[in-house]
Amino acid sequence: MKLSDPLKISYRTLSASKLRFFLTVLGVVIGVASVILVMAIGASAQKLVLSQIENVGSNLVAILPGASEEKGPPASALGIITTTFTNDDLKALRERRNVPHLSAITGYVSGSATAEFQSTSLESSFQGVSPDLIQIENIHIASGRFFFPEEEYDLSRVMVIGATRAKELFANRNPVGETVTLKKIPFKVIGVLEERGSATFSNPDTLIYVPLGTAQKLLLGIHYLNSARAKIDDPINIERSIADITLLLRKRHDMKDTEESDFSVRSTVAALDILTTITDVLKYFLLAIASLSLLVGGIGIMNSMLISVSQRVREVGLRKAVGAQRIHIITQFLIEASFITLVGGIIGIIFGVLIAYIASLVLVKLGYDWRFLVPLFSLGIGFFVSFIIGIIFGLYPAIKASRISPMEALRYE
Image (spheres, rainbow, N blue to C red):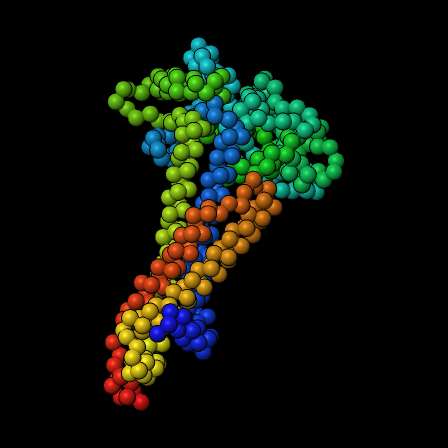
């Protein structure tokens, strides 16, 4: 038997049962496409997180209320509300003698409300922040100004709005000097920010910023902070500053040496590590689900090949009667199974890449700095896995076919 003979026989067999071939390939296509899509989205998400951290700089420190594991998410991310981090803590952190290398700091509180200007109403997210936000987040003013220090706690009814929200509320007119109501409270627009692009989990261009004290007392009715972010004068002083902040807050909160801190202090690098860990866990979880699709596809291939074996008893028996050996029969059926999975793998790779590309276009259209990334090794994995599935799930039907004797072929007739 020539080496090309099993290929020719396999091609004729698969061509004769196009519907079964299509349905069998479909399972592999879905599985491989899912794997490629998950790995592409995972790579793009991690790149987005990294770019956001790079944009704000490596010399920032986040202060988050609530205890948390060193490598785990903050308590606030788990929906736990902690009220122990206050404005007095923020004021103490601003004192240079307490944290010598701290150059700027802002507190954060957030909420949502209906923003109204004349006949236009939009459900909007707002943040109460300190004047230092401009230094912390590298914000640039397109028109007007940002908050003065004295406006942070004197309940000033002023606001600065993001570029997108300004367009939505005011169309082509200049918002500076106009009055917008939040929760029926009038606020004077004093500034509009330059467009920044979407961040990892939000779009800052749609945010409305108000002074910290105003947001706490007039809009939210709270006395505590959701978080704070500090800028350190030099990245080499990050660890020293984290220690200073931790010592100060533990002292202010009257914490004993044996007590766990009721807050966490993390650098942007540590935050990146945590976010990377979270995205990795999510990626591998989704990969496990996608692998189930491949498993189902493999079982479908095995069932299809077993049906093929039962329908080709006469053919196999006659081939063995004229001299075909078991290895020839096994080779033929393995080639058929591998061909099915390789076709499914190639189509799955194409579909996975295409869907990932379309998803990136949609996210960019929504304003996110999303980059289309498909790790090259994921393409190799998709191709290799599809081939291995063909071998593994085609082996049993192939062995079963090789055991058919010429006498069985006669009885089959």
